[in-house]
Image (cartoon, rainbow over all chains, first blue to last red; front, side, top):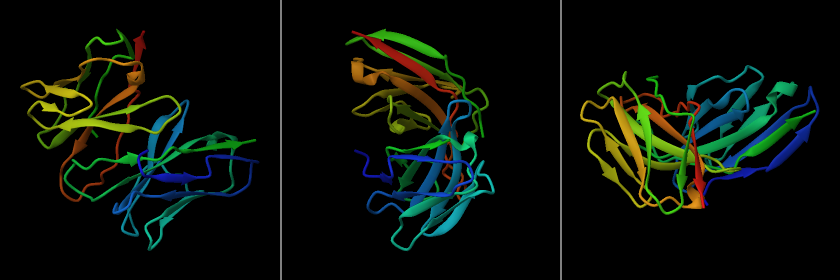
Length: 115
Length: 113
């Protein structure tokens, strides 16, 4: 158990809908990262938040957005869903930013299926 | 982001040592070498990281070539639980940069009983 929790575990929805994925980081971790894992693209970085502020963006679509709340939990919002958005979405957390050495702890993931 | 090259797959036998290679010929002086692994149906898991010197922890050892253009993750006694996809990742230690992980395709390790 990494200490990172993600809800829900599974999500099935239809095209055009909007969903929210939730992540609670490990106690004391200020950074939250979101990754998407699909069969054709592998694991890809989406976005990072540090202590409530956006820190870095990766290959995140404009239909997707995220935020980190004062209690440090984070939500990833996916809207106007398409079939190709079906994937595993992982949240990771780490204690600090900078230095290249901090360890990221991954949650169990949310499996999104868009029908 | 600097690139790493790993074999697509490897096989090993249970309770034997296994050496997982990684090439990173374009590594810069500020890049740390990190290894993560992903067990089936789980999120990635940190294994080990290093800069120049060899490193040991409870999970594995990391041997880094003197020129830093390659490294080897060593599992001293493979168990069935070590069957996973292993990712070798370079991370810039430059201050102010994002700490994101850039995953390649990784290497699938199969452990035979």
